[in-house]
Image (spheres, rainbow, N blue to C red):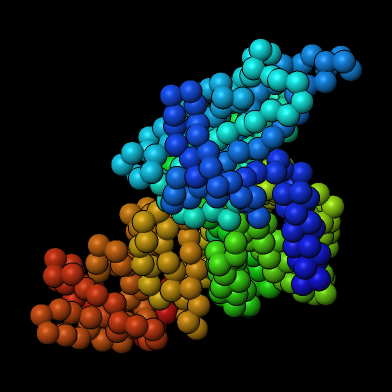
Length: 482
């Protein structure tokens, strides 16, 4: 918990520093006259420029580039936020982004980011008056910081191409991992591979959504959906991470940990600001996942120590570079976590396949046993202890003596030809071992076959005559007596 508090202080300090570096603005009553904006009753903006749900005129005084010091770089006004905008410098119109208005009907939504180049002839010696006309009636959600950038900077503004490239590489790796785990799940039907595929896919989609802003100049009403998607994807990754680590290292408390993660991570929706929501969702998810990993270390489970160290590394990155938490470190964490697990899973599957081949070879000399292939490996099940075989798509359930059940990667049609003569198909999805039958009983207009233990089995009308005939016949040699 103390790590989370430190992160909050750091993020709050960065936000305060950013506000302190913003241009000082005044809010005014304004109207557009023949020669430009006409402003009156200007008062300092105490906190943040917020045009949400209203029409707003603001002004500021800025210094011209210092040509005497050789500063000849071109300048541009950069605006980023959920607002339509129009700008003037020294009474000369710089341009418009959409059309600000006094009502939602009057406003034409603009783009989230707008760049207005400034001609050299527009500057004056000394102070220069910058006027903005803003409105935001189509933003959807209300943002704690609606305008993320408002200022004049050198043009063109340097782009974070290296960060974008790393994000693309991470997203590509995550998509490849999602595909790989999806194939593994299709082949082996393992729950862990499905969770890892979901984790990789969610992180890859978030990387793509994060990259929309520098790649796609979208209308500002879309920003609410984009930020909501980023938070939802971060929260989903956090819950999936807790689920995966709990399943692997603390399976008895898996349901409790998932419920706790849903409650704690979901509560971040109440926090102000989407950056804070996303950061808290990720940090809380990693912190909760560290609990079952620590339990695994205590129980000396394989891989627990490495998992706990990796989660601690993410927490250290979050504390050391909080401004990069959602932009970069999260994607590197996800890629660095799932890619090694994909390699481990492939190695394990290869080892399991070799084990299956060896088990099948051993089973060739054991006609009294059925070679059961499942996601967990290969097991030799005594045929005499099989009560019934129940079909379930591409798998069958073997109900064994003693209440035990096994999942077998086979189809019911194929097994009906492999099992001995005392096994009979009594329903389209059930094969029964007649050696364990107690009675055939009518239940209304249906028939049920009761075995020596377990729930009664359904008997279809079309197969009832064959069942009665088999029950009246003497048992085959070598079957278990009833």
